[in-house]
Image (spheres, rainbow, N blue to C red):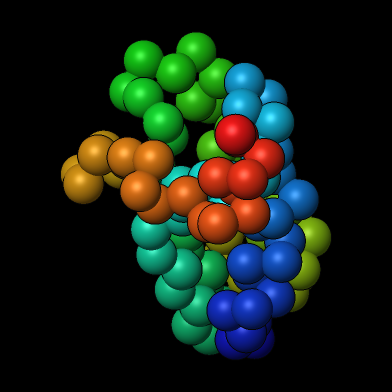
Length: 99
């Protein structure tokens, strides 16, 4: 099943970076979403390569996508560091929350 991008984004919006208190979509941590028959891939980053919660946040992102994927769909979350994250990637809403 091909899951619409908007549905994947909505699922990812439920994942909150615990240090920032803002969801990973509004933080600008999601770089790419690919949904094809039988496969959903999310490329994401974190605010810093030294993030102690990297594994947890990536696992939560994967679990969130699994909630909207079909039973046979594979879900893969890939953490990338290039390009590095900057606050410029944050949504206007995140900027307001962050101050």
